Amino acid sequence: MNTPPPSERGTVRRLPQRASYEEAVIHSILDEGLVAHVGVAVEGQPYVIPMIYGRIGRHLYLHGASVSRLARQLAQGVPVCLTVTLLDGLVLARSAFHHSANYRSVVALGTAVLVTDDEEKTRALEALTDHALRGRWAEVRPPNAQERKATSVLRLPLDEASAKVRTGPPRDDDEDLPLECWAGVLPLRLLTLPPEPAPDLREGIHPSAALLEYRVRQGSS
Image (cartoon, rainbow, N blue to C red; front, side, top):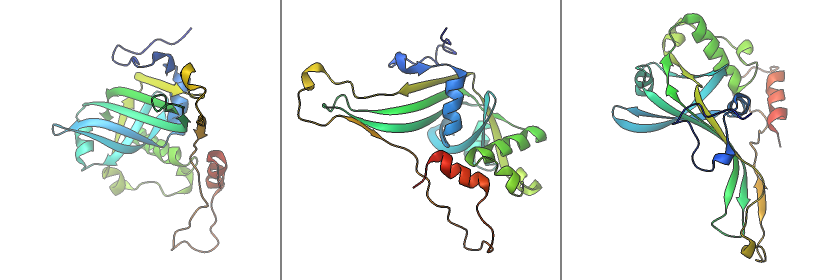
């Protein structure tokens, strides 16, 4: 049985056959993505801000400078719309109208809440760090008291989240099939390059296994 939409406003209207409300699908897209775009009204003006995030269970965690306008606004409990998109390929049809893209995306609606519990804040910062590079938290110095004070962490529930996915070749009209025009999919992927050491890195310190594993997992040149 298909999972029903989480709410009326969380229902995918355009091409609903591409929608999924399954937690496993939503979580897999969020776990593979790196950057979320967060839409929120700040001082009466609409903004869309790219933000790194981390996931723990059915919640996403965002972070920013405590003094930033966005963090202060979100901490007041305002509605937000968060999106994550993975672009898998360009779909090249025989007609301009049927050009498209293969993608996996998530839209989450909800209210971000300021994390005040110290233990939860630590777990969230660990999740944010390890989302960028699995195992990185264990390799580095954790934030000190001053750094933690300067950082706001916000929790967004995934109660109203939906996924939308397109796969496969172009869907050309029958009358366009005889056209002398190449049609198909140009696959795309995120490419990682060799690590570039910091100019002040001491000799003899090499990339960790987590970093080398990341290159293999994401694909490398």
